[in-house]
Length: 404
Image (cartoon, rainbow, N blue to C red; front, side, top):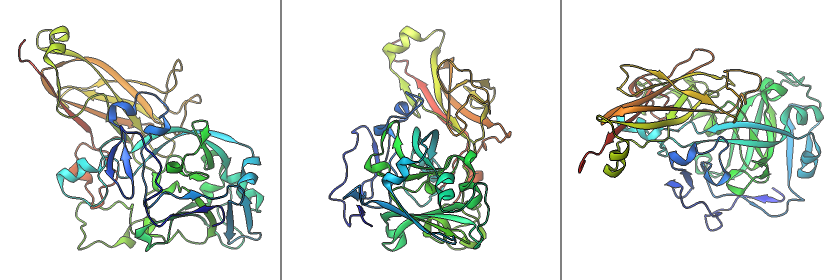
């Protein structure tokens, strides 16, 4: 498209932070260390996970860049970048999470297909841009519309990004028109991230942000918007990111039996400790009393659809007993699930300081404001694509005791 192009190779990739754990080099997929992930409520851009399906597009001429809006509407329109920036700007704090977050742990139970991810395919940012509801109103689609006069019921987002799964065609996804035209859904055409212009990895110059929904629907490097009658028929809507039961494998799968995944379930993860972390003996001597050590347990909890986090429970004895962790978002503002002062699309950080024994299993599980709770066992939610691993998060901690 004019002003923005998708390269055919990986020779012009942007630079990335050296601390990122690279899960795939081409296309580039990487995540930060879990400890860095919750060092702040808003994730620094350079530490935000990178999820890509092809070479990173390049802007040739920002003045020529535009988005075509067409389909089942009366007045198709071409919107230039400058036109979008002239619309009212909104800042929305929202957490994006790849549906494959924690896939590696699910694969240990039984092999799955997909890029391996630890627990950091997630991040929280302040996205700035125009509301999609305002943009659609410019072309004659009123707010809170579920169907256009011509029968349009879905909004398809098409990227400049070219990917192998689409046989070299563009990445694309869709959401219901009723969601796109609802101002309260906060769907954005975003051009800023944490107060700065988007960088190339995160969709420069323009991307979609669909809060509360798996990251696959927040299309980057936007090329066009189509108003269509049915869901997008692209690969990532019809042949991927669908939730199947453990009984389905590659020999008996029927993609048509499941709808595309949208909201993500309730999730929580311990980030302050690595699995099988062993405390150094010197540190133990200063902190260890009668075989116990004082440890700060912290992490994130989040639920899709704008649902708040009602509770985060932590166990230091493998799930026999539980303690409630402290939850917070912004400093100095008490967090109450679904409270009016909260960022409803954003994660909640949690922490608990407790004495743990020399060797133990620490577990976290969250409950959202609709009383949804994480499943105990990953085996119960295993699926062949390894998506939505929201099982109890377990960390096996061990205190070194040599030379004590």
